[in-house]
Length: 114
Image 1 (cartoon, one colour):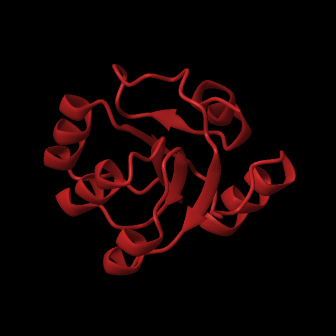
Image 2 (cartoon, one colour):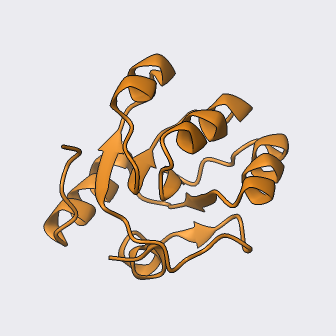
């Protein structure tokens, strides 16, 4: 599934319009402890987190994730969005809870991380 196909599935808004929405989402994950995500992040991952600061983008880039998803319409800090935009990292904002987002991704065939 591509990020473009993921957007309507999770009722998301793309907060980084220049990001590549054709990128494949290979797996999903949810966690808010950045050090844990650094050790478990994977290429092509769609990461659900409530964290909004710049380090989220750094961790996502480190693992070459497909996108970062902000649940419950949480707004990411503008500085973080600017960094994501500059680096080509897609940030999505969804009105759904993290639980619902992950449930929908799993039901649509996006697996958990390896």
